[in-house]
Image (cartoon, rainbow, N blue to C red; front, side, top):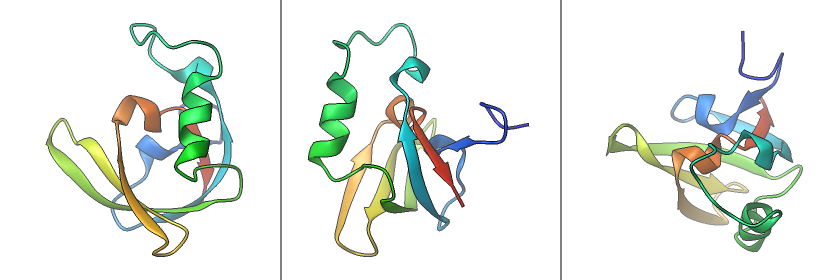
Length: 93
């Protein structure tokens, strides 16, 4: 079963899969990461990750598959995101 019922997070997605962002849930961020409320969502919005954005996993880092290289909106931009941040991005295939 997926982490939150039937929903998956970006960190659950396999390489080369495309998904659509459903929402961002900061409560899924590990407790050892200290950010002000809304800070992570603001950062993700600044780089173009928001509801209905299409994301494609391109590559995983060598150590613990971290960071994750993600293409945003079919070639618009490629970014690297930490795995713990990807765990807050709820997606659908």
